[in-house]
Each structure stands twice: as structure tokens, then as C-alpha cells.
Image 1 (cartoon, rainbow, N blue to C red):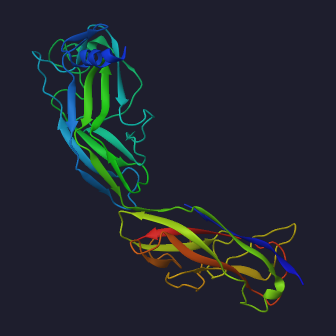
Image 2 (tube, rainbow, N blue to C red):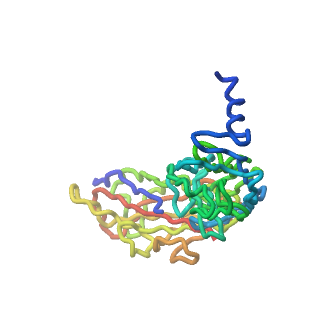
Length: 361
């Protein structure tokens, strides 16, 4: 009696210490502190307030601004200056205090929370502030009428200049699951000649709630076993169904969840039979295919799914709707089994590969 070798199919998701605090305070807090030819008037502290809770809508594109806050830099005062002035050329640097100083993308500065970045933007100047390497600052920057356009000498420099509105934006940089919190913290600092000119702070903690669903099983292998060819007595006869699950975690979102399976071996296949991948040595089995069906209490349980295009759009061909994310199990049950597609089944490897694309509507 001939036997069909044990194989299966794979599904892949496409898609000294006590002195330090005192010394630090002396450096940052004492007015008119001088260092290396530069003098600090007073550090310009820019406090931003954001909503206590921010919800990220599901499927938000990368770069989406989810909330923002505005503050105004202090007005210029020669008698009580903010910022730093220098009597020689010096350097300035801007540092991200809540995340890495990695190069920014689209002027988005990363935070310590994956999937969330921020931007600092001055609309009147049309300018973003990024995290930069130390940059040369000529002496003319500290002179009246110099490159900064300051009206008096010496010119004390802060981030943005005097009396300008600066916008802090939180931006989507990747998927967010669950609830994350950005604490009240320093976000960004401008240092001129080794002195802290500007300190950008988030004044309150902000809770980020991600409305999204994440597949926890991006690659699934389903062994269908070694099946005797005698099991298949005619077209449509099947082997025993083998269960498998797709792990789904939905957070902060109420949506109808759908799924489309696509035949990787034949992307144009719209039948309910997954084709067998070609094999040469040994030759693959013939007269056989694979059926996938929802299981448990999912809609259409026991009925083989038909294959469709790899797309998440609503109404995609042969997309099956599984139910509301709030009522679905975290492990979605399915089954897979061999099915005869011809009256004669010949033995050999019988592997199939399907992809699945989730849709949240």
C-alpha cells in the first residue's frame, strides 16, 4: 500500500559622589556663569503640556501627529538675559534627553517608547529642530545684526530665538500596542559653549493608548502527517483535519476582524484548495491539495476558505469576517487537511504555503 510522506504547509505573515548634585546645580543654575569664553544668563526652560491621555487611531500611517502642545520662548531682555553669549567662536549641540540620539527621520526624534517620536517645530520660521552633532557657531552670532538678527550686543542665544511659538508634536513611528506612558521629563536640550541655553520639558505625564491589533504568530508550521494514499477513495475525500491557531492581540480598539488567505504557490488561485508546491527529487504528490477552514465557534467553522489577493481592504475577494475584536479569542482556531483533487493520488512530498492578511474594519 503506498503512503504519502509526512509533510504539511507553512503560513507566514506577509506583511566624590555627594558633591556632584551641588556642583551640577552650580553649573546649571547660577546666573552669569562663565565657561570657555561663554556666559550663561539664565537657562530658558520651555515647558510643554500635553493631554493626560492620547489615543492612537488604528491603522494610523507613520508620521501621523497624534497630539501637540505649544509654548513661547521668553522675550529678550538685555538687563536679565536668557541663554548663552560668547566672546569667541564656539560650538552648540542639541541632545535628545528621552530616547536615543540616532539620526532623525522626517525631523522625528525617537522617544524611549518604540512607535512614538516627537518633533519641535517653529511655524513662523518654518524650521524643525533635530538632534545634531556639535556644530560651529561663529562669533558674529553673538553680535547685534549678526546671523541671528539680535538687536543688542551681546546677543544671548536660546533655542528658536526670543518670543517665538514652538510646537511639540507626538508622532507615530511604528505600531503601538497596549498602554504606554511618557513621564514628565526633560525631552531636549541646547548646549552652547558647554552651557545649557535651553531645556525643553514635558510638564505632565502623557498616557499613550494604541488602538491596534497585532498577530502574535507571524509564522506557523502545520504538520499534516504521513498519510496513506488509500485514505483517498475519490475526489473530495480528505485526511484527518489538523488544528492550528493564529494568535491575535487587539488593544484599545473595537473593530470587526477579517482575514484573507492567499496561495503563495499560485497567487491567482481563488478556489478553496491550496496547491502543492513543486518538488523534483522525489517528485511531489499528485492529485492532492490542502483545505483550510475556520474552527471552534468562528463563523464558517468547518467550511474550507477560498483564497484571494493579499490585501487588507474591506471587501477583499474571499475575505472572511471573524467577528468583533472584543469578543474573539486571542487564539483563532483553524484546521488544515489534505483533500483529493483527482481519483488517483500518487505519493510524494505534499507541501503548501499560504499567507494570511488580517483586516480591522
